[in-house]
Length: 438
Ligand SMILES: [Zn+2]
Image: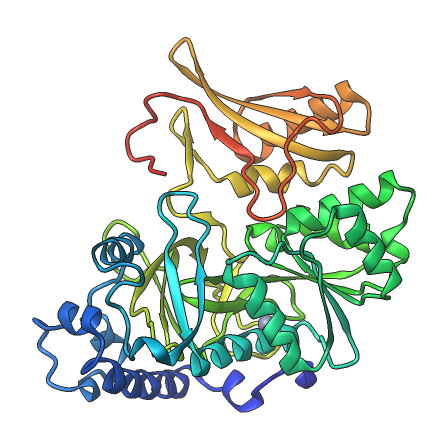
């Protein structure tokens, strides 16, 4: 156990029942503030048999409350532009606005007050603490610094830690590599994909990042940092320890990696997490993550369906924390499972296998239908022997996932590179099989 990495040693090691009581107390206080003022939730909860917020004293009673969904928030915002009716306070109490990427529709705008912005920073402080980041570190943020909240909250949290922060927005990848070396950076924050891309750029320029001062990398936006294949690759290229993190604009920075590096802890000081069967809504060990945030009173989410697929660990985490551990982090989106000839395949499972091959610098997966049969085709860029690498990947995927795939090699530098959320999976089947959304 590394007690230095605990932000709150008491809370982080509390027994489950006592921890739930702390959470429910916070939740009651939150309801007390929001219900008389927040039009969205007072309307949503109007018909419920809850006389007072203090009626919710257990997780069972919490489950009496309905779920909140992204589409609900989006349509509320469309009907009540520009910020919707999920506002607890007068507009002038809010000091920050951010928005989601909007890849699947109109972006969702989210507001924060000074208090809730401090709460975001505190959640990030937990992420840094657990990764062993201290005031003596120099952090580089390889982000574009647009209106996406992750950039700014990560940056704000670093200030609480007292580390020196370098905002790497508006720079080319090469300029970022040079800045990392010139400033003797010790911590890199970016997506897993982008950490690999920076290493590729450095190698192309004859620079060795394994010899840089970077000892820790923190990643979010994709499952990579908890996928053993991707994690090992990042750690080797950067000669650093790689930590996972997860959050969402409408929810908060809810997850953090620890020294055990086996997945994500839920920051249960600031969030209540449930895992449900995405079809029935019943509690489950593996399924969709549902989150209630406890510190964003100005624009809260209660029992929010994140769409993230997770699995609860059955064993206590070696780091000593009693906070929930999600084995393998976020495994993907509940609705991004690809069904190939009746076999459910998660994009992350394919990535995990492809990343075991250090010769592969980038890849893309195409799902096609030929002669009424589904086919999975993988395009790779490789620095190794074309025929050997493709044959080895085909073999590993057949052995690991029971799928026949066809791997082709394309010239280096021809596949798209991503600096935010990578989109390597292209389902080209029309119509897509029933039950597949997104
Ligand atoms: Zn742990």
